[in-house]
Image 1 (cartoon, one colour):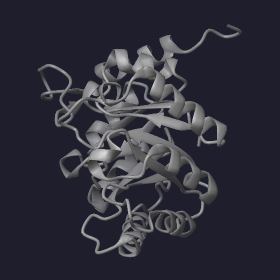
Image 2: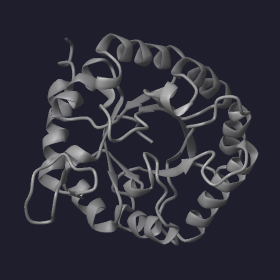
Image 3: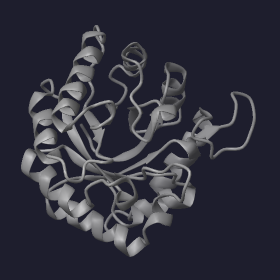
Amino acid sequence: MIWRGLLVSVRDGDEAAEALAGGCAIIDVKEPLAGPLGAAAPATVAAIAAIVSNSSPWTLACGELLDAAADAEAGRRRALAFVADVCQKLAAAPAPAAVKVGLSGAVGTPWREALGGIAAGLPAGTGLVAVAYADWQRCRAPNLEDLVVAAAAIGCRGVLVDTFDKVGPGLFGQADRDTIGRWVTLAHAAGLPIALAGKLGLDDVASAVAVGADVVGVRSVACRAGRSAGGDGDRLGTVHRDRVRRAVDRFAAALPAAGG
């Protein structure tokens, strides 16, 4: 997987087609009604994968480790069972390049062991992206420093920094630019690519690239309120190619000039 470019989160096949038409680099499959990393129904995931085919890599949100799970070990089993169910339904479509599991509420649990077990149990060719929440204190998730150490030790494919609370401020409202830049440096020092996401507007896309993010993840800025009209910025709206193209162009414009 080429871990570089704009990632767009989609919830159905129509949105996947729009995101690809807008030029995104990576498709992410999730259900925004089910939380920041809400898992879509396996049949929906398979339908999206069939549309994406080999056009781009795609990633899969698997929910929170402790969603409907009594403990971290039960969460590990549930996550792997979900991925296995999805893969059984893919037919000829490619498997996800990576999966993501959230760690809200995981402080004080053996989350490192659970993540390691998920990484070891994934199908060949599918990696694990470790997820840190910028508002980690509010949702009792591990901080980024601890997460990066664990991710490097278990061979994760990369790190994602997102926001858990989708009603509050976005990523650049949760942390200042210097702090986010230090997170990027820390991940890169551990040999891990890093994605930044969390209610990012167009200016935030440029800021994420400027601090060194390899991948910038968006949904709300790629959506309009309805299929025919309406303002953008609604993560429960509908992904549209024109809005994806704006974000792709902003990502590209923020990249350092060659040789600069």
